[in-house]
Image (spheres, rainbow, N blue to C red):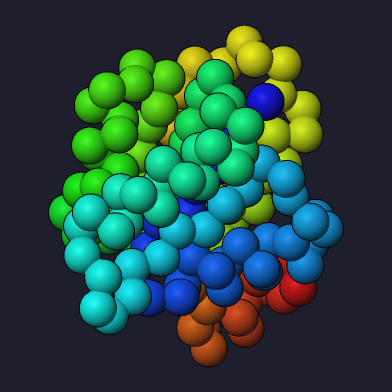
Length: 145
């Protein structure tokens, strides 16, 4: 099974992991890493290393970050640059996390980290939508509600 680490600024990672666990129950192969005030890059890097150990050093690690180029992303990149089966997707959202957490349940080890990252991006993108007055009041949209 691949491991998932959600790394974010503030306590967002803890909150989104908690939301995911409301749907699936406790997830053994999902960890949150946070950057909080008073911490620096080395603190975040150490948290990533600890999270990977807590995951049992899985063969593949998918890191879902909040922001491309932020400290949580940059420290994840330090790890990924040394491990060919680790990958990062920036722009985490709940649909992405739910999809990838569900994918853990059926993972047979055949998907590469690149394929897992592509799946994460697809799920995250498909989870973004908007609903306006006009869209909600068309026959087509009413049928979907």
